[in-house]
Amino acid sequence: MKPTDMMIWRFHLTTKKQKYKRMKHVFIRFFLITLVLFTFSCSGEDGINGTDGVDGTDGVDGVDNGVGTLILTGDVTNEEAVTLVAENFGEDTHSILIKNTTNLTAVDISSVSNLASLIVEGNENLQSLLLANVTTIIERAEISNNPSLDRVDLSSLTVLNSGLTVNANPVLTSINVANLRSSASITFSDQPLLERLDLSNLTTINGGLSIRNHENIASVSLASLQSLSSLDITSNNMLLELSIPNLETATTIAISSNMAMERIDLPVLQTTSNSRNAIRINSNENLTSLNLNSVTTGGGFTFSGNSNLATLTLNALTSTDFISIDSNTSLTTASFSNLTSCATLQILNNEALSNFNFERLENVGSRLFVEDNTTLTTISFPALTNIGNGTGFSLSIENNDRVTTLSFPSLQTYGSSSRGIRLTFVSLESINFNQLSSIHELIINSESIVTNINISSLQDFDELAFSRLSTPAIDTVIGRLVNITPPITGTTISFTGTPSPESTTDIDTLRSNDNTVTVRN
Image (cartoon, rainbow, N blue to C red; front, side, top):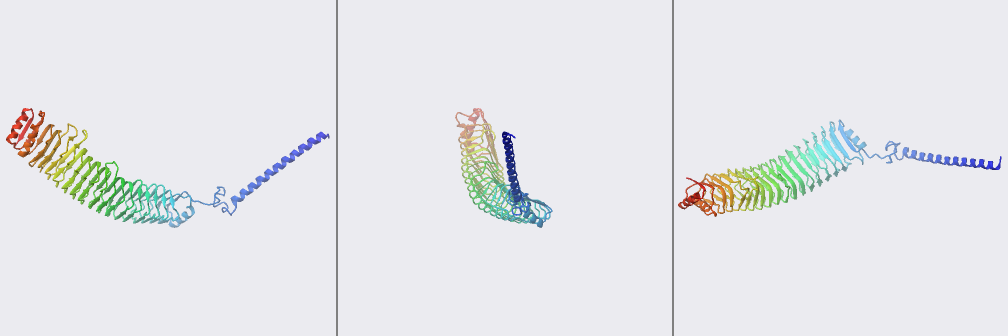
């Protein structure tokens, strides 16, 4: 062999040895890594032979954090529920669903503090629900249609981000949510045995509060509540009073058909929404005291069917779109002394009403109705300058049988030029339209004799008619009409009564100017 050939052979041999050595090192490293991984996944020290974790491959060292939603349903028993909670509840559990169980009578999950949702619905024999350490529920919370449920303990609950519904639990006598401080909408309805509801630490509701259809609830505590969207307190037959001493703002308030309620106290409430149904106080048969003394603005106010309410006072109210005072059979006085503007005002069927005060009311934009108030003797709007904007308006004053005085001393405009005033009375004696200068027609009928009439600014009209006037009243009317300058022509004038000789002469003058004047004896 040549030296050169020997050198080439040795070179190849060296190269093969180096390759073999490198492959050996790679194999050893792979074996060691595999051994380490096998040891960590199967060792009994960090998971129990791969059964407490997920076969030792999830990197959680074999710790079980529970299911996302804990579900109790069907024929699960109390004992089975305890086992299910123990085996499935953990840090990852965010929701509890207890639905349509038939054997379950008690649930006590004291380990939970925060939940995404809680639904307890349709459980035939469930009697008690204890979640005494829950402080926050982020999403839906509902406890409904559980025919045997007697007790609910949510005594640590402070925050309900998406609200609470407790509905149709017919034997529920106790629900503890006394530490609740803020919530979205809250509804309690149809728990006929519930006697007390303590929400005394609740300050804010970002939605509505509805408490409806409880036959025996006698006490509702809302001592800290400052604001909410809507308030609905309806058909709670034993509830004696509703006091919310710190409530300042609300969108709408409805307090209706609470048969035993004697007192409603909202002393610092100032503003409501622009809705026509902003405040409705209806059909509370025993209501004797209503405090809305701080309300300054609101879209609409309805007070109806409160049989024992004698006084209605909203003297801080300055403007609104709608007021209806209807069928309050014991109401004697209504006072809205600072109200300046109202689109619609209705005072109807209040048989004991003897006086009302709208002394600063200047504008009624749409409708003014005063009807069927059989004790009322005076209808007076001393500051009212305008009734009606455009054509969509009306004035109705009728069946107020004892009214003797009709006074609109500041009224200057009455809607469009094509509209008129037609009123009928039984006992009317005095009429005052002192500032009214123009109207299509003014027709006032009375079964009694009107002795005093003031139309001293009247300039422009088409028809003027009065059913019965005394001679001095006729002299006042005719004296005004004959002295209008330039002289009126083409009008219709009629009245019943006996004019004086001077008025007879003036009537002839009016007729000569092409006015139709009819005098009936």
